[in-house]
Image (cartoon, rainbow, N blue to C red; front, side, top):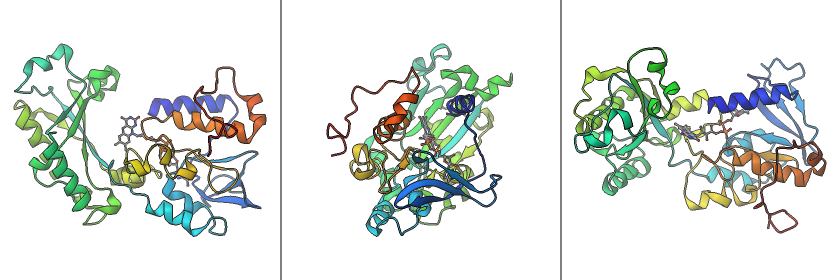
Length: 332
Ligand SMILES: Cc1cc2nc3c(=O)[nH]c(=O)nc-3n(C[C@H](O)[C@H](O)[C@H](O)COP(=O)(O)OP(=O)(O)OC[C@H]3O[C@@H](n4cnc5c(N)ncnc54)[C@H](O)[C@@H]3O)c2cc1C
């Protein structure tokens, strides 16, 4: 994700964009019902703390942050309430990176894990009963799993197996591998014991993950671990303002909040109730893991709303053959 962001930044700079950091947008400027620009925080180095848009204003923020950026004079309370009602349940991941001296050898299938052809990803402790129990713990009891038996569906990704340059230990010339482990926990906002509850038991959760791993791969004794840097959903929220819930999918991935219902049916084509204000984030359609589709789809909408944009699209850009224009009934 980092390489992608950097390529985009370099491309933007090469095309004359100016990128201003540490300047959070505090308000969308709306004139006569139309978005005209944004005001940024007082700490910004921008002289007049304002950016005017010559066409649309595009917000790359979590959908739940939109009401805070728009004066309530311009949106109705139903719209705000509908955004507040969106659920964050489902994708808040506790991530720990196991930097290990050797890879796990799973006792039930050692031949599947030969060093020359070691699988990149796998999931442990993942039968339906385990997963259902974990979902009940997280979503009904609003708790993180406490006992190793409850640690269902833990995903392991062996990064340097996929791409040797991703293995930090290897890159530094050291022995070892990096295994990223993801475990679902409640969104910090919903945790029974408060938003920092998972952070308070970080070490305990890492120990439990190691215990589960050792049940399947007995070679993973404590001496095999070099370090275990960990990132909780709460940490993600502090690192990245738009990761509300620390949710890798942005919001709940159930039918009523997914696909063309994402984030709300009336915003599925990136337009908001404010003319000239667009939403382009992983909480927009189609969402997490289809990221390039979000700005690509938005381009079609912008070209419909600002036909002059068509003249400045580069040669390599082409419209999707599947896009249904407004004229063809797309918005309907
Ligand atoms: C644990 C985890 C694992 C993941 N794994 C994968 C994976 O393997 N593959 C994959 O494809 N995706 C993965 N994702 C998802 C992926 O990281 C996100 O979908 C992606 O980063 C979303 O990009 P975005 O540009 O929509 O939003 P963001 O990355 O959230 O960017 C929004 C930006 O806007 C800024 N911002 C917010 N509010 C304001 C404001 N008011 N003013 C100015 N700036 C503001 C934020 O600081 C941020 O820089 C993972 C996510 C997590 C949390």
